[in-house]
Image (cartoon, rainbow, N blue to C red; front, side, top):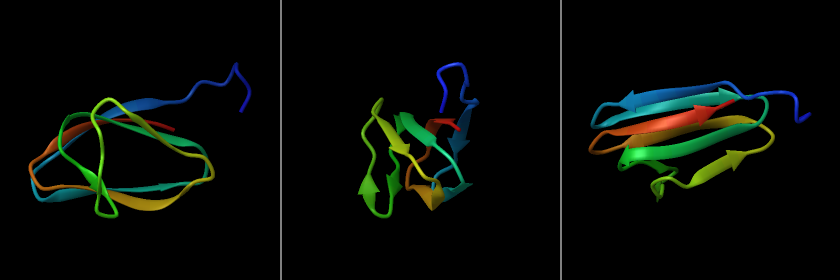
Length: 72
């Protein structure tokens, strides 16, 4: 990705006992802003960026609700 290209960023609020399904073909960065969430059973740390370089399909699940920032 060229430095002049900018990623689109969007905030998502996920209700308790819900998931956000993500399907991407390019780079995707996820950051947990509040609450608790997991991907494939692994808990996400708050304010840490998780980057998926070559796309994929996955879901972010939350037991208690959360807010995420996703860049793609």
